[in-house]
Image 1 (cartoon, rainbow, N blue to C red):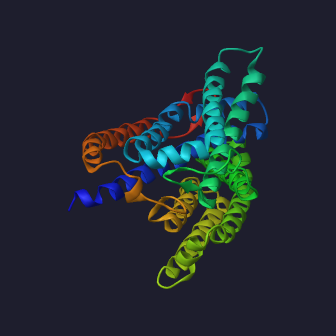
Image 2 (image 1 turned 90 degrees about the vertical axis):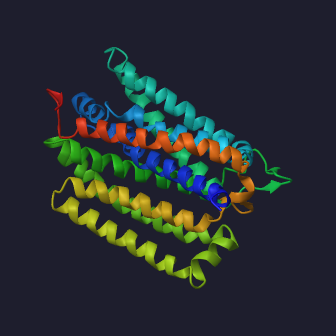
Length: 335
């Protein structure tokens, strides 16, 4: 009986890994997106210092999600990759270039502005590529005879560009609320001020994408507007609005932790909404979780290692954030 559910257990693990990547690396990318809004080089330095101890570890979850998809859902991987080659390659190159810029900007003065632009450009390109890939997946991937049946440019549509911009703005909100949490003084006030329009824009984008998503496939509309699944179409937006209200209130009262947690909450509710639309598909509109999974023997073997690996990753991630908790001071770094 346990074997019958292995594919859905693995779908949950991969979904969890992707969500953790988005909420952890999201504020990291958001800092790069906000780089042009910094007043001077000192502010950019302290912005980067706020994520220096944790930024590379955040991407562990991206590796886990992508590697897990390849290992346990090979058919889904074989369909998704040809459909999304362009945005995925752009994302990976942007993350690589962004990582190089992160390290090199500290080791030069003459080229520091160039690497600042590289950090900003890599962050923007990675965020846009992730959002475009998500939009292309939501609008559906053509599958015929268990293979990708679409064209090279099918991923590029008005809807996928919209989701790309929406994710870019959402990451900027995460970055602003993270900096409000970690910094102090003038730059903290500046980032708190930037978080308010970013919150409004994120909420507007969430609403627009939510309205357009049911139009991408009749299955989405059926799940959201037919009883009893219609309950979700009320519950999720209500949670989004309540979280957005708490975020706005926290920013107005000068709070630090609550706005960041609420910004993360917006991403969690949006992710749950996407999951409701997809389930039980792994590649909409026609490739199901069970159909795309590897044999149960492979799933069981991989699950043993993953059951050991994920708690270790969670433990060292939590430990890193705990060790480097507290405010960042420009003259001292972390404390």
